[in-house]
Image 1: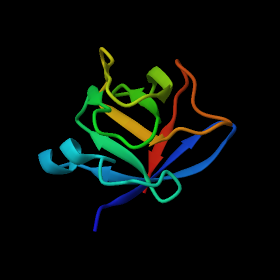
Image 2: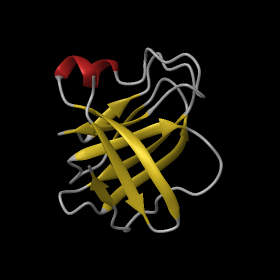
Image 3: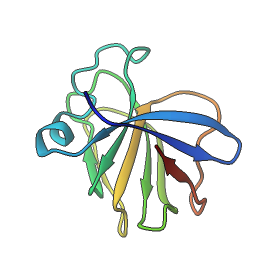
Image 4: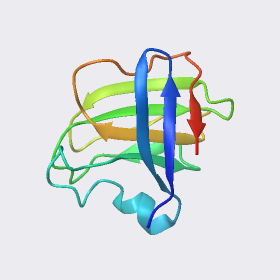
Length: 112
């Protein structure tokens, strides 16, 4: 059972995150999810680059530095891409959706 954390940001409801730590967990990420409504949001630790090859749906991504400042945001990323962010130490992935999301330069909190 993966560890659960929460992303807290101004103007955003608390976002439940499944923490991915092992190489296998990070490699697979959300690849197993076929239905965006059932896919969890994930926190990929010790990570600054992600791929969307094989994904069944678009993703919203948030790259965070060691101070939990958002260094890059990408919304609606289609399958078949590689994205990275200099200075990032972790990435939050969620199935793409309309509505509020974090902004570059914003500080967020990851809580237990």
